[in-house]
Image 1 (cartoon, one colour):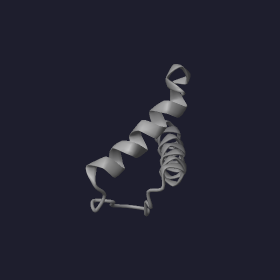
Image 2 (cartoon, rainbow, N blue to C red):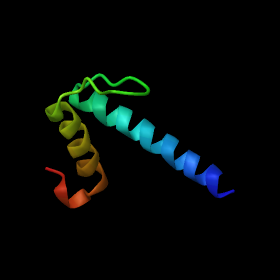
Image 3 (tube, rainbow, N blue to C red):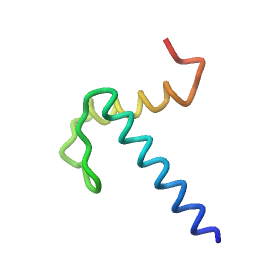
Length: 58
């Protein structure tokens, strides 16, 4: 049962990551995205944090 919850959580985070990437204009593909620049990857992570942590919203 633990593996099922872990898989669902991973899928939810992947969807969240894809949504955040589209909001900042970065094209992600399923699987490996090693061709992203550090700036692109950072903008995705930053967008995710801005959504998860309400105090940081502009």
